[in-house]
Image (cartoon, rainbow, N blue to C red; front, side, top):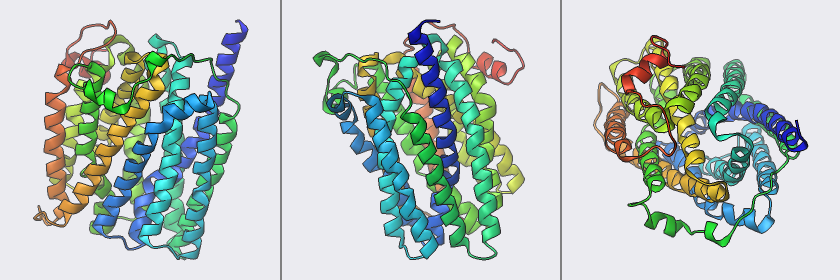
Length: 429
């Protein structure tokens, strides 16, 4: 093994250790921002804003991500600085939870800053990682990585739910203060390992630079641009409803924090259990084939919540959700790695995130607005919103992916064969 291979192996090890602690932070924070806002007495529009504005500002700020990499001449320098700033944003969150002084607006501003700093780091980190893993091993490697780190996220989320349930007996605000403080500690350790990563040399020419509007101008002719449009429309449809699952469980159905945690992390556990298998299949049959299978399944999920809202039934819905989202999310990112040259990756990932962030923002804002106007379905307005979201998801999932093209040679397979292989009836890999 030569020195460059040793460096790559060492960097991947540091990246994995960073991922362990970053996943711990995610577990303590990700699914508990909306519950904390509910605790502060937020309205439906404020809950929509919590899920809209962080995505909007985080996406817009990524327009400068590639330019900052060129200016600093280092992807590692950019993501280590922004991750450090992201960690600092957790301290005022912990403080206001401890002091019980924040309004929903103040908390939303802090979440916007927290999300923006994390978003600035993402394109540069993803570009660097894509240089370290061979093309024909990305599905398997990132499947294994995401699976392992996902278990850390689940463990942290379970612990967070247990802490909140116990602190509810005394002062639930102190419970959230503990969560945000733990998340800060985890992110700082994550930042330490990021600083140890080695950055491969990346040469860039003028031909690799193009503006966001030049990217949009090619949306009719570019396979990649159409793929970005598809994912953005899918995320818009998803985010019409997704901010309000927590509202339905905690406010409308009266679930405890621990039951909420169990139902929420069930999907993550399923993602972890299936993502490696999705990755192995993606290396063989391509990313688009899996996306075409997973997207319609994602479309049906809100409809299942309309059918029944018993915790046991929701548990099985979350298993299906984790199964579908594991394949969709893994193959979405891997398709970008396949479709874009290394020199353009930071910029293309940033533009991908810009459009998706805008779509997520618009979806959440529209969902918060509609929730106050829609008629009730089976006694809940949220369920009518779920129905609209489901119909839009299915429409996007069935219409657009068929026009997209795979960007590397893959094995031809029918969707039914892929599904049966994934669930182990007729394994292909």
